[in-house]
Image 1: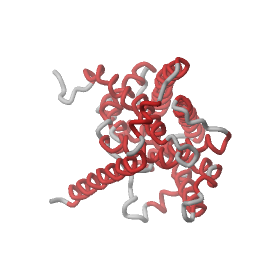
Image 2: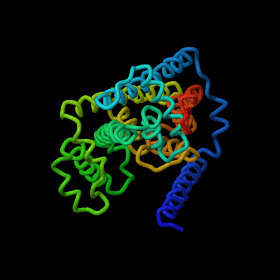
Image 3: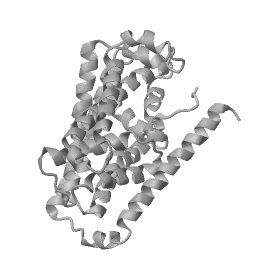
Length: 316
């Protein structure tokens, strides 16, 4: 068996194990009261309106992502806003079964232009990397504001400092790739990685604009989460509690998952984070599930209607 194949199987097993542990964590926390809590949950008419708003915001969420992607690849491939949105949604569908949905990146490039597949994939990776940066940046800021909620975590301040250094390094990669290329080439694993060269193709202004669009998109799905939590009776009062959303996104984003474990991981992370301020554990889990269904599962289902775009075999 080739070593790369072995690594793939090991990663798959680890991701499945993470999913199992996440589900077990949820089970242990809510096994006694989950059904009773479900029966007590009553969504009033104003909350139904809230969910309609959240669903509409899903379109805004992926619309901003489509605009950002279109902006990122515009020097290589010019496309309409509608086409960018359609391929972005279809990318969600095709990337649905890949670890951490990384398949969305090459899927969009493959659907758009096979000839420029490599270049478009690298530029799309820059777009996705900007979203990771925003998630980590706001997550670190959120951790500072919520440190008092996690006093039971040993060396929590050290964790924040470590994450801050990690954020600084990623910002250097994003903005100062040319300065780091020589250093990276000394590391065998990083040597001649074309993804780093892709960053240098963008001007400082373009990189800032991409980050701004990622920030706007972040505000949209953070607002969605806030509205859903409120609908389920979990009120976030003040900057300290609202910042827990940023912490939740940061932790969940950096845990490796596959589709069968993602729901469990997101639910367990939400339970751990928001459990520090609320005893409504079942509602916390449901809120994270609803957000995932609206922002990931629903777009993936919508993308099924565009599968005709996918042509694995070239037609004459």
